[in-house]
Image 1 (cartoon, rainbow, N blue to C red):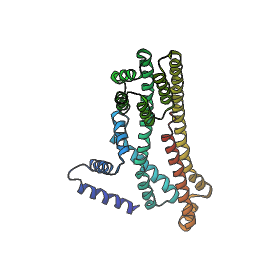
Image 2: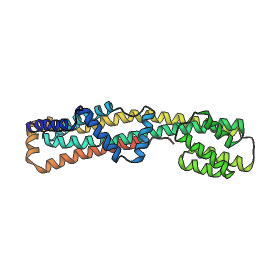
Image 3: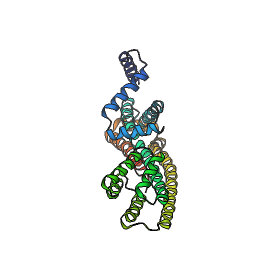
Image 4: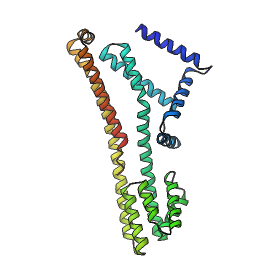
Length: 298
């Protein structure tokens, strides 16, 4: 423990001497942001900027709090397993290094939910505009000019309009949008408007009304599924953390001193404990990845 304290003090002094008058906290934050700007994938940067624009990205203070919580949990849990401060510090570094990946997963989920909401607005309003104009291109122009869409969907709608006027046909416009946003309600609406455009005008009022009802039911199901997934996610995290703490039950059964002697004297037991920690961590990380990537939009 004395070695750990000395190591922390030395690290603080080094960082302070390199900070050029800045606070150590600000110095660390600036360096982390520089590393992010240099190595983060372009797609992540775009998604993260959109999350910031929507006010849904974590602030620096929130990320700092997350780092502290993860570091404390990693140190406490690993120390309960090995009673070795050096090993615990290694686990702290590994766990904290996973935070950018978790941020990436979270931003992808937030961005996916945003895109789904924008697609819902695009489809619903295009159908309502078409019921008035009886022209798919005019409906697209009405939705675009209304200002209810946000980028990137707004820009893609403008591309659709330009393609339609350039080609004199909506086929390429529809193919473009379908390839960008592979949603059932998008393809269904586009297929109907493609048939109307190429086969001539006809009474589509009932079909459009039924399509709007289907969209309402789909959206209701998506939001219900989202709430259920959030509740399950909280329970999953609690269960994952409890799995780590099962080691306390083992120590209660055989005695803490006996447990420490076994860990310090038996390499196989140490390896087995590391495997248990890694398996539990993989279980948690896989669940987090599934929760954030499979948003249940359709």
